[in-house]
Image 1 (cartoon, rainbow, N blue to C red):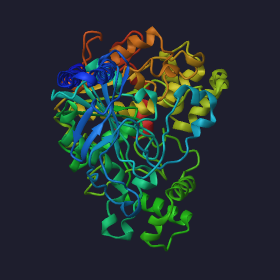
Image 2: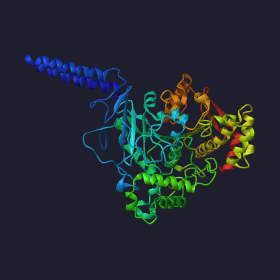
Image 3: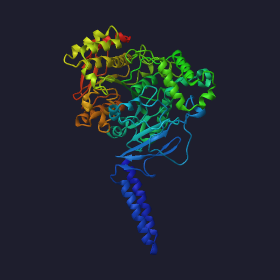
Image 4: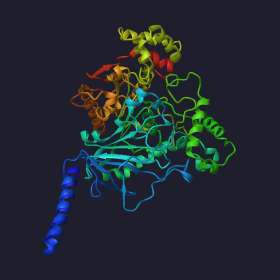
Length: 575
């Protein structure tokens, strides 16, 4: 039933109990009955009234395979947080594939976010501007971190599209709650959809190759991805109880979350668990290989002083020791001057990433073509204009000269940088040198996204839709620009919730409506088009259309063709 029907039914049941009590009591008990009735009426009125927050043992109760959970209602949306989709991964379970959660008796409270995977402390807190703007919620770390969060308009058996959000942070950091823009309430209300987010194991807890310790650990380098598959199985088996349709599931992720979406496409156990895919600033062509994973494992064991230790001894270590050893190991394996652009098609040296093991992950996602499983599955993919190259925390970047910009770009692309800079400059003759430099650098992310769209289109099956988010935030004098993560709040219709990122203006709300409706329509129909956007054609080699999300949304055909050809060639992306 819908939230309002749920509330009315609860109120009616309480009134019926009051009526029966009043009719049965008489004499000296009447006064006591009246007092009880007044209390019941007050409780009923409070539950059925307009209060934004409502929590009660009788409200927002749903059934899962492991037991019943009680959430809360906020502004008519039923919200459940911290629901276990897997068992505790600590102790003897460390580095092993996750198991389903142990059933519980009675009613489990699910009103706040659960633990997040062990991970490094966030460096961003050291930067006042950045910390204020992002307003992170890093939560509490722990190995009992396999949790889902659900937002739904009703527990009514209705088959709503399900939108599963997979967080970013590479494969070593982040959570389903880390940014205010991740909150699923507005998206659930706007689109009549069910929104799910999740936590899973990260870094050395989820992507370290300990296969050398025995066959039971042969999949240890991919258990973080296997956690996500287990979460999608939880959605398949439980989401109908939350008003969702397990046959209409969209997986969507940004940055590292987008890379995880891409990797799910080449995991046989994930087949059939999702029916649409959205990749935001995280297009992944290549993932890790066993030889790189082994080098990282060797270095982690050296940093732990555990090169000759048993697995039992390693499991007994505090997880914080593993996290710190992983940080030191990664620093020693990094190549000097290495950047995201240089390694644009795949992971950097020292990255904790899933690997192609031939069983759990059977191939690279988009090395030469799109994964066969994607042929019937629509895909939406895109990037933001400036990505990680902005002047947040660095107002001095605004004064960068043309000569400085060109010299800096050589460090990214080498000899081709001169042609790339000139191509962007020709399109933007009045642009500040730093802006030209930023677009050139962020062009590597767009090159990866375009290649994904091109390969998906070449399958000849379900369509691919390409977007480019160019909207510039006004906060901090506009220095953050269209920064990495900036589109998330718009896709979730959370421009007010994330006001320190967007400014919280009517201008932001207008674009947030247009973008979130596109995401909703894509989840429901496999096509993002709607009345408040210009017609958005599917991407094809003959018509490489890009939807540009800005104050005035528009479709352009290969608007940056010249620089993209040069960037793709510099990065080894097939033409």
